[in-house]
View 1 (tube, rainbow, N blue to C red):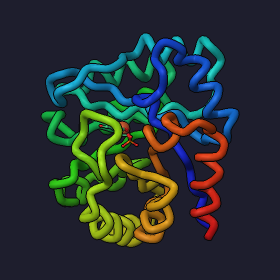
View 2: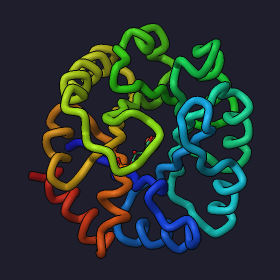
View 3: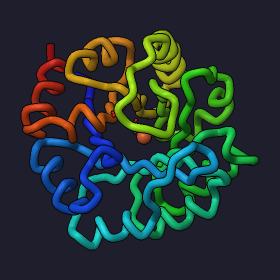
View 4: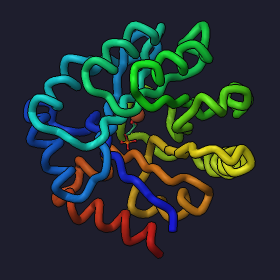
Amino acid sequence: MTDYKIAPSILSANFARLGEEVDAVLEAGADWVHFDVMDNHYVPNLTIGPMVCQALRKHGVKAPIDVHLMVEPVDDMIRMFADAGATYITFHPEASRHVDRSLQLIRSLGCKAGLVLNPASGLDSVRYVMDRLDMLLLMSVNPGFGGQKFIPATLGKLREARQLIDDSGLDIRLEIDGGVTGQNIAEIAAAGADTFVAGSAIFNADDYAEAITAMRTALES
Ligand SMILES: O=C(CO)[C@H](O)[C@H](O)COP(=O)(O)O
Ligand SMILES: [Fe+2]
């Protein structure tokens, strides 16, 4: 059976009570914390940095923190997030001049490494660095904002990515980010994803446990 992971994106959490919000989703059954970092340069929005990641660790968060860097360049932020307690660090290949080197940097700092592909980007940029990846993240919305609609063409790309990973024989997670809901998660899993980021579908729900349980039930179906 596939080891599915659900990673609520704190982009849709109440930032005024972030520690409690993260405790609440983990208590409600989430596996990971998805941490969106935006710099108003790579994407037209600005969020949170390594100090907030470190604060969550100090607050007592033990779950994996999945840092999604939407910043350019990436190497300084990789170092700072590794120091701040990140588990996974993923970045967009076009935001690094030397993708292979940035991936090596992440692992050298003891974190798990991943690349993120935007909706219009093909799989070519990951083909020759597969052995440097612990995760491949496909964006199913354009990066920068929560609450957008899932782009259906991502399903075909997920199938191709699943094939690429299976053919490689490597242990690489396949994560999907953007517009994931309890209604579409089963179809997304059938296309090959094993790790699901969901922001608005969880944090906008009245009951986080109910939203996460509905996702797990759909995954089991
Ligand atoms: O990386 C992101 C946006 O750039 C977020 O992780 C993503 O949009 C999650 O939010 P939602 O589930 O509401 O789409
Ligand atoms: Fe994200």
